[in-house]
Image (cartoon, rainbow, N blue to C red):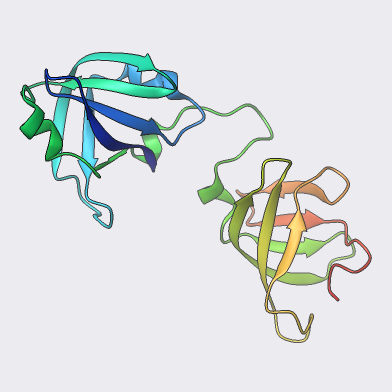
Length: 172
């Protein structure tokens, strides 16, 4: 899971500026090293130990061991910082990571199987589940389900489904 991206060099000591892609940017202060990946990479290109970490104007500034010049830091621009599922920060009860939601089956409170969640849109006000409907459910290519308590009544990743209170017009 991506937790940040190196977007620039910071200063002249080889520090890098990271835009955090995590709800827990403080996690960088607890890390001993970072795993660097290319954008489409599945395996880390480098694992580099951390010397320093600080926050500056909403970004994370990292001083990586052995990266001591602007040119060396510039070579890391665009790299993603990722963690494994075993390194994720625990969420409060009832909250889930997006990867835990994608692939779940959307089922109504009456037992109608709508389809499979293929994406989660983060709109700011509330998330929206994008559901690829099963044949015969609707003529729509996707069903957009607002993630609000009146609509999403239960989320059960361990059982493979989400319970939906079907709103009028949702399938039109």
